[in-house]
Amino acid sequence: MTTRKTPLPASRSRYKGSSELREELPYQHDFDNLSYIGIQMLSTWQVDRHTHEHFELCYVDEGQGWFSIDGDLYRVRQGDLFLTKPGEGHQGASLGESYRLYYTGFQLTNRQKLEADFYRLGRARTVRDTSGDVKRLFDAVFAEIEDPGPHSALMAESLFQQLLVRVIRLYREAALPDGGPEDGPLAPAMKELLQYLHEHASIDINALDLAKRQHLSRTHLEREFKRSFGIPLGKYIRMLCTDRAKYWLAETGETITSVAERLGFSSLHAFSVFFKRQTGISPYAYRRPFSPNDEKR
Image (cartoon, rainbow, N blue to C red):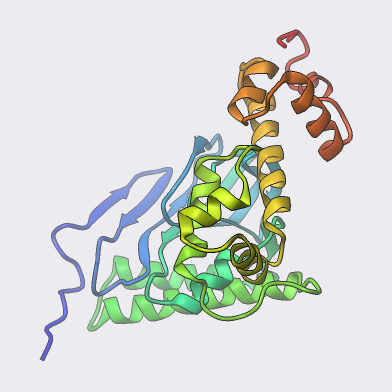
């Protein structure tokens, strides 16, 4: 017979202040999925670009703000959800005087089919919860953690899984593209590949080298990637490089030449041609609104 951990182990970390409530939950057995959960109530909230090795879900309970993933900007307001995958560089901030944000970090190692559904989410990362179910489930999880009763850990994990299922249903109801990814667990090789691409975004990454890393044939790798994510591998790499370029051009002081080099382009001209083909404007024209006085090349 296996003995479960007590609901509130000594190793838990809690922060409670006037502008934030956060619970770190390092339960390796009681909570297979949930790593942390919190509520942010600072009207001037802002977080710089960072990455996680886990998924992160945010829910705007009050006010409005923005998030970005590698250069793609998303405006959010009350009732909106926003999700990032492992390895995606993201940041965000509030807009206005009143802001309240629920957030949680989680892994789904033991829930492979659900994990695959989250990995397969496309570029449309905001979705609205008109029913209020997401807020209700967030609050219910908090209630079990903050004021534990008998079997609170079990109840909180059950509620959290309901939350995740509700979230993925909202995303799938919002957009069900034709020819999208297949259902079923995501192969470990595809998860590893996705994380590698986000960590080493470069235009000179090619399918043959990636296939060698995964000990697969190029044909099999490209077929499996399309099956898993509903998009060709080459197109995903181009999209990722474009997003990363947008971020560096808009949010950093790096020269355009430096951005081109970081993304593996052989010359500034090659990068400029690529960027204009993907966005319709040159890198210099894209940067100008963000840095009116910037002449950096």
